Length: 375
Image (tube, rainbow, N blue to C red; front, side, top):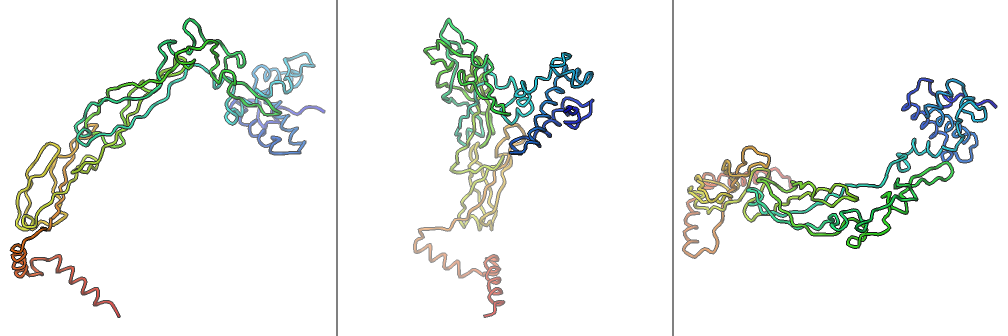
């Protein structure tokens, strides 16, 4: 039976690009794949037909021969061409087109120099150090290049040899039926080389554990969640690969007085009820020392006073934030008898509506609430 036209099989025109040809083959192959059509001989035949067509048309020389002579140009029995080769190279086609599903196409995953892993170090800072900046010494456990074998893993005076199992590719191709899957080479474990005489200092790993002491310069204004990158201070690479980086993760510890919100600082300032009623002047702390704060008469709990420029300067520059002082009126405790008597006399002079407007308003609202209730 005469063979169908390869372009017709894949549903493309003769001027189709290589990219569109691959897309067309993927579409047809997926539709008629035996795993999707079990016990369907027709689908299996169409799948083989599409694979044969793609094998020819994806090869520049075979495609040119096919375009000029038709099937005779790629049929080895005709003596005119190199031949389609049936399904001899089908595993290569399948690996190229479906490599993203089954572990990559040819040449991927080859062993050799590999960049080292990045590391993370959690650094706790006081609020003062975070705001002003500081320099700290940290000790980081890591993997460094072996100084005996210079990171090669081979005993001094020797070198690694190309793996004979994978020919230095780091991967081997396993074919089962229509499937071709690339796997890490079991002999060299993906490195592409094997070490016959390993270095005694690092047991052939090319790296050894070590604790490094590093100096970290913390810029002013950092906050929790900020990261400081130390290039090249991560783990050493494999087989001469570049080292990774070290990321220092900042965590600002809680402060006994201040709370931070971005570039602003907040603190509570206790005020006795006499100063709150009559007004006065208090000393309040800042990160730069104490400052005077004037409290006006009749100040209530929750009142915020803003001290401009007494907050935090942003780490990337800009104007500093503010210090927000929240007043907390403190009720006196441990009163003596005389003090209690004076307070009772003072209370007798109070006129709720005038001297305690919030209290009076609250009681009025409560009366209205219960008055509206139907019992």
